Image 1 (spheres, rainbow, N blue to C red):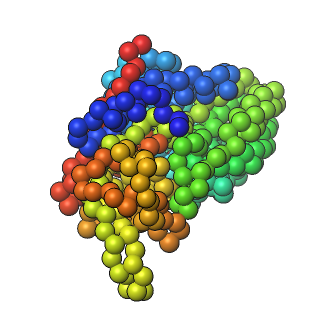
Image 2: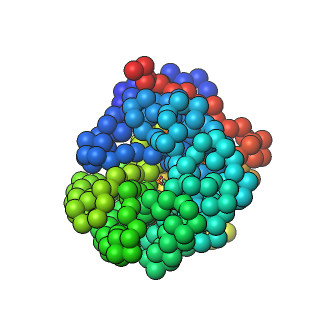
Length: 390
Ligand SMILES: *Cc1c(COP(=O)(O)O)cnc(C)c1O
């Protein structure tokens, strides 16, 4: 069990469907990260949990924010963090987006192309830019490999273009893929960064920041086969510490290190109280009888990642009875609103009745932001934050 007792008590007391965030758990996770990686500055990736109370909780403890749009920047500013703790971390920005961010006081921009650099130079004169390096995404549940980042050669071109355009070429960033499960991915990213810092230094580009991105894993979810994920977190931290030290020593200019964790800070500190909609046993087209357990929430209101993950389910009140293997699915008329049942079935109580409470654990990341505006008439879940008084 990874949740604290507070969130379990909240789940037990709930009288409606609801997502709970445990602010003390999130604060503890943040403190642990800071202690594992001394000197790291956190820029929380807001999309993982764009909830004011969660952002306030992290801001009070010294975190800043990785924002991806003017609207996210606005929400980050509302926490009261100094503007230099908010950066525009999305490489994809329209002219209007850049101008809006600049007007709001943002001076740090991610980039990965000379076209974007030219727009930043025009609309955010004098800003600082950091160039995102592409990674393979290997070893991650979600690779993010194609859409973002550039090659090392291009990064040199991009940062030289920035310097020529009067911008400050301030740093480099990577993202090794979301829910990265291997320390090797970090190792190769750090090796590439080290090589690139050396090349840039030779060309007289002195960086002040290396941003190691997101990707740090959550611990409490299951893979789509129902197996614990069990990422080698201690080894990942060791690789990061060693890589930061080496980069710092090798760089011709002093470096600050940032990370943009999203999932890692919030996933295991959010849980949903849902209900059983129906347990049915239908004869399938292949002639087999298959149990399906439909929940009151699903892909469109809280369980967006159910295609790649299985969330741990708990059926309070059914601890003793007989369990049967079932497909887990949400309540909508969309066939994607279900676990990948070819990968693995889930044990559910044979006696599960419509209305019985179900607890969905470790679903605090990418739940709120991915919720639709009532697809098929199923409302977004209300949320409650618990704890976090200090
Ligand atoms: C989504 C995102 C993150 C957070 O990723 P996690 O895998 O949740 O840690 C960090 N940085 C950027 C630029 C992102 O787009």
